[in-house]
Image (cartoon, rainbow, N blue to C red; front, side, top):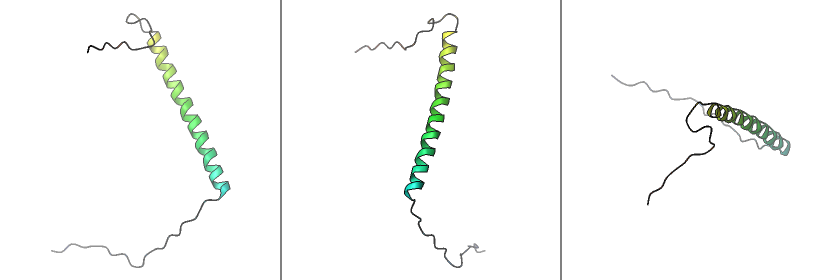
Length: 72
């Protein structure tokens, strides 16, 4: 028994196309817009978490930090 291997025929040449100044400006605008949107979603999630922690009955009473005790 032998293994069948695919051997491609002719190679394909791909040329690199440099981006223009306008392309780079558009990519930067899109990146900034996407980043702003992601930051907005993150802040909304964190705000919801803070609200849930604040409304939690008992416990720490809605403190905004973590107490860590270090013994050396």
